[in-house]
Amino acid sequence: MSDLEEELRQVAGQAADRAQPLAAAEVIRRGDRRRRRRVVRDGVAVLMAAGAIATGAGVLSASLDGARPAPQSPAGRPAPSARPAPGSVTRSPAPVPSPPGPSLAGPSRSAAAPGSGATPGSGATPGSGATPGSVPFRTPPPAPAAR
Image (cartoon, rainbow, N blue to C red; front, side, top):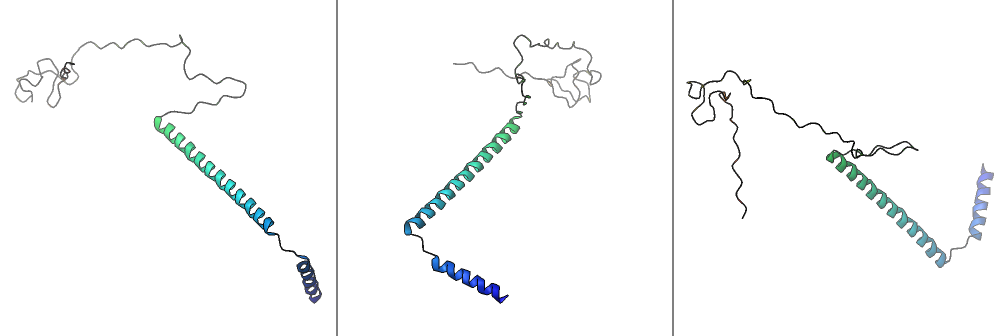
């Protein structure tokens, strides 16, 4: 073992004898190179973080709006249009109101029937179907005239 230690010390001594210090210009050049690399690395990290934040915000706002991303089409086929072609839009007919008929709330009572809860002027009239606790429909007041 002592032969190995002695040989290692001899090699280290020879390397130390041949070693020369770096010139000041070389030290400065190496320091500048390290600084530039660090600045570029940090700048790339900032850009990646900003991109991740922007992507996250875009996904979040799209999910809050209820929007869905456009479907990806397989290669070679065009993507389907989000809008239907003009003229292919079919419209459903306008809704038709149902005819007036007997009330589902129960038999109608007269406006002045005792215990009915209806009072004169409350909107409950004979045949209107108003029951105790129901709110009659009222039209909103007219809008003020523009000057």
